[in-house]
Length: 290
Image (cartoon, rainbow, N blue to C red; front, side):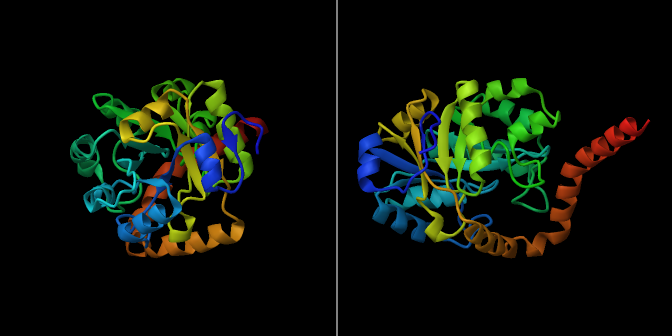
């Protein structure tokens, strides 16, 4: 247990879910509709066996969510997408129905996808969130302090002075435990949610089938509408554990296979996102030497 409000770092059991729930959902999972090799069918079978729900949040894609909802598996499926912003942050958007998700995607994501489809679209964070304002959806800052040297976390960009702190006000919740992040950075994310009174979500950011369900968001409602309202109203708790370094390495190796064909455009995206940070670092270094 972390000692942070509503965040419990422990093994997930049916008894624990029943105690805090009754509904547990892995709110951040990827399939072969983006940069994973895991099929939707396998995802649903494992979720059913574990007694949990799942939000399939493929990068800049919704076909995985659509397939899961068509399957009629009996698993609670939260319609979702992870949108990668041009200025770095990853934004998790959850919709109350698949029709709204489809409309948002067709109008505000698909037309702006680039040559590397799972990386940044041609809209920045502010514009992605602004365009979501006309929809009933829940806006979540994914892994706000990660990953590694990349600008893929909202608060990381804020603290680096690329974005204003005020933009966090436009988000409903913070991902307080991401399976792919370190414990230290997840604890900072949980503290961020508390400081700004944001809802709490957690998920594995899983790309391999055995990742699914190792981090879940637990709430009292058993349907999508009630469950997402639980997130916004801060009634959810997060239970689970981060991946080990070995698990992260294995997952990273698998993910890379999905990017090989997009190597050159992917390198360009990373350069465009990280060049401003490098230039600022050099300017500050020169200033200190004067």
